[in-house]
Image (cartoon, rainbow, N blue to C red; front, side, top):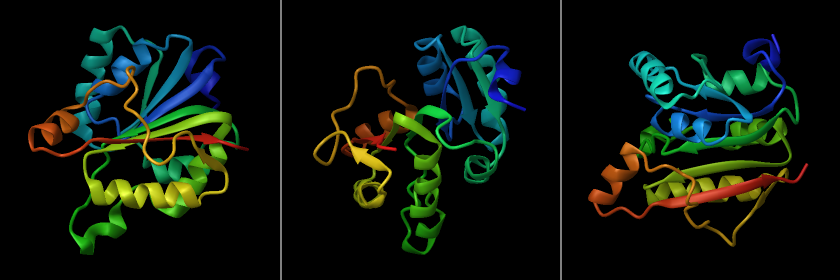
Length: 184
């Protein structure tokens, strides 16, 4: 089914990968009523909490998708169909033996870049410096993406502060934003 079939209208499509309990997604979607927003989350308690939070925010333009985002991007979306994607504070999997679990790896970044419309954006943020460095390297290497900043981007005023960001700041971590545009 097409996004229009799920939303009952044709609109620009955005999404948050790893929306958790939808705190960020609710704020981002409420601020973008002209967008249709997909919230990708596989953590069941997060999905349940999301429903309440989205209703409280009045974000009627959000649909939850409880399917792995890596699989979804490769199988549910056509090239150029998404205008904006957010991945805010993905699990850094800090132990070296777990790095293979990190979300933003080259093959997934390529799939995201292919699904972004020309001029569309991929915004990621983390408070884990080694992961930020790795993400920057992977994103810079993707030929379908262009860094909008010289390295790290300034934190945009529209990006809500997440609970993971709050925790990271409390621990003295530096928050890093990366914003890439689809050159396609």
